Structures are given as C-alpha cells and as structure tokens.
Length: 217
Image (cartoon, rainbow, N blue to C red; front, top):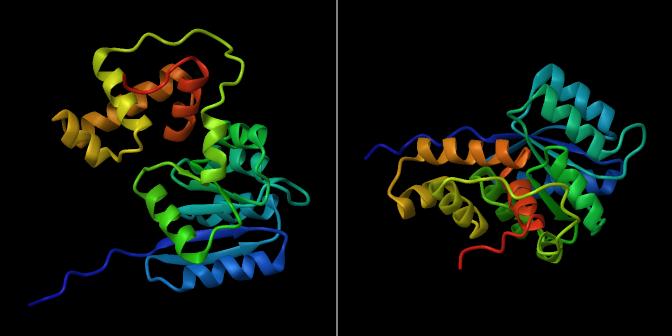
C-alpha cells in the first residue's frame, strides 16, 4: 500500500532578542516534522525585512525587542504579507498588549511558559484556524474593554457562525454543524471581520465580547 505523501512543513520565522529563547523555540519545533524554522532573528525590523523579501507561513514574535517591537512588526508583516500567520510568543501576560497584538493582525498570543508539547499543539491549532491564546490570557478576552461603537447588525447566519467561533471551532467543524460548505463559512467569517473591523478570528471574538456578545444562549 502506497503511503500518502506528507504535506510540506510550515515555514516559521522566530523573532526574539533572547538567544536562549530563540534556541529553545527552534529546538522545540525541530522535534516534529510539520514545522520548519527557516529564520531566527533578533528584532522586529529584521523579521519584517526577511518576511517581505522571502515570505514565511508563520511568524513567532516576541513583544519586547530592540529597534522594533513585536506589535509594530506584526502590523507591518500583516500589511506586507497577509498570508503570514502571526503568533505573539512572549513573557508579558498583559491585557492591553494582548488586545494591541490582535489589532495589529496577530492570530494568537502565547506565553513562553508553555512546554514543548503545549507550544506545538497551540501552533497546530492556530494553523487549523483555531484560537491560540495561553489559558492565563483567556480571561482578558472575557473582560470587555470600553466599546468604541455599537454592535454591528448581523444576519442570522453570521450570528450562528460567530457563536461557532466563540466555541473555538474550525471551519470544517462549523460547516458540519451548520450544514454549509467550508467556502461559505470562510465568506461569513470574512464578513464578520469586516463588520467588526478586525483582522483575525480571535480579534473578532474579543471585539464581539467587548460590544456585549456573550456566546450562544
């Protein structure tokens, strides 16, 4: 019986000014075959430069770095390479930093206290479109910030999709639950992001909660 060829490994850039942290994260990802670290840099400016010139599928950014911090780098990377998934990987469990990172285009916010297996599982979940947030930070998403405007008008289907996102389900799981195609799910998610003025699924959930959404009833 012929084995199915494995999908190519996800290319990863690590940006962290701490040499030990860069080495540890790289070592963690080298333990598995579905991630391939192609660059490890010391600041946000170098991360932006590398991704603009070469492109990667996933960027792991520390928040506090010299020359350019991770949040500014995330915003520039998101603009230059929208297909790059940005994950903040940091020691700062700060609510404001979490929200600023999501607003800059980050798809996740993970703390460096994760073990190797936890980090790999979180990155795999993010790759499947699931929220990637350390458990310690989840409470931040349930603590509303001051709303800047009213909750947008949603169609019944968009409300159902938002409820599914809130439950942490992937596109495939949402499609199965609502008996629609995955392409339809993507279209509804895109519409939700437009209406909420957000740049990621996770930021959409946080923004909806800020405006009073509390999940399915």
